[in-house]
Length: 401
Ligand SMILES: *Cc1c(COP(=O)(O)O)cnc(C)c1O
Image (cartoon, rainbow, N blue to C red; front, side, top):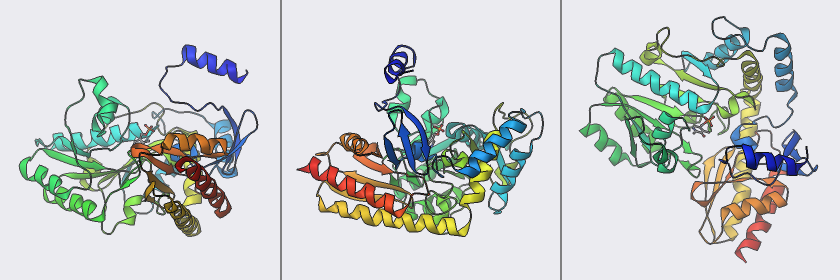
């Protein structure tokens, strides 16, 4: 099939939902991915924070291939070994007690929302509302789109599931107001870094206020770690970068499977006992092949050396990005570890920068707010970081001239 055939079939038959680049990718190795013409791209997006070990990692490939040969699917009417091994790896650190495995981030958040509702319904209480942040992103299913604090994702699909209230991010006063005036709040659900929203960090004061107020009012704290988790921000979970914050529920996906589709919802304490048989379910979730991939990922990324390398290279990337401050159009650097943002003023179109960078052989992305987003494979090398930031310097110099 030629690239023209591919584009024709897509334009005729694939739902026209995605702003795709004029590129068809074919294979990759390390942090480099190649298109069907053989052009290499150093990937600073990693399939949107998914390919955390890059392309063709031998441990993931071996895990997937041997598991596919042995047993590809079982349903959850039976036990399977990779699902159990993954459950053990996700609970060995003692933070969370219970795990539910699904296929995507949105599904993990759906599970978190259902667990929260079940917990309070079971107590016969009246708490059901979930506070989420304006500018957040939690997924594309109806409930997670309603949870997402950006009307463009939800308004076209009204009527929406009720019970989601959006509050300004990092605003402790607005948060306290909600709790003071409403005793039906069941949970606060947040990202520690709003990824899609433009790489915006939660302040430590805000997360502390969320933890304190949820505790005081008998509500739950849910952290959406779908983009920030699995070492992306220099720690297994990004909430570990903050002092004394332990959420009741977290959700994972993206990097967890290193490229295989998988999500997970983890809970601790009382709420982890709220689901009873039949309350929730999934046909594919906990699939042995996806779980085998996730086990390979976790074994590799949770070593102290790997975490140190992510922190060090993340710091290098941040440091090299500060060179862009030579241009007044570069407004600020945000994020943490290997999830960084560079906010541009409105005189430069971030999407045009992304296209120029593609021409130069680098995949980056423009998130909300005209912010360039960098989320490379965690195995990215200092030399690759240096060549990307040098190319970006040239592209922005040209765009701002
Ligand atoms: C990507 C993302 C989701 C949705 O994950 P899907 O796998 O696309 O359903 C939810 N929350 C956050 C923070 C994300 O980055």
